[in-house]
Length: 80
Image (cartoon, rainbow, N blue to C red; front, side):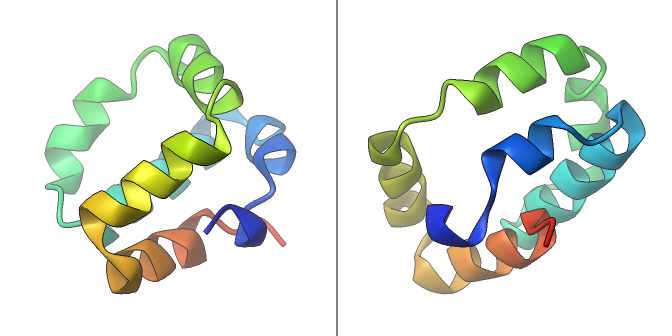
């Protein structure tokens, strides 16, 4: 999944663009997008969390949601 997502490009999005992508990705993972919106108020904290993700963190997320959902999430986060 991390090969398809350029973290630096995500971090360079505007706050609104980043929120939109995160809401879409969360929806692809099965989360309720309306509930996710509330968690996205602090974009500085969100950017810090994204910037500190390691390959191991990403692999753990993939294992948690499964390959199919991970690929769908990556489509929503892709900034290319």
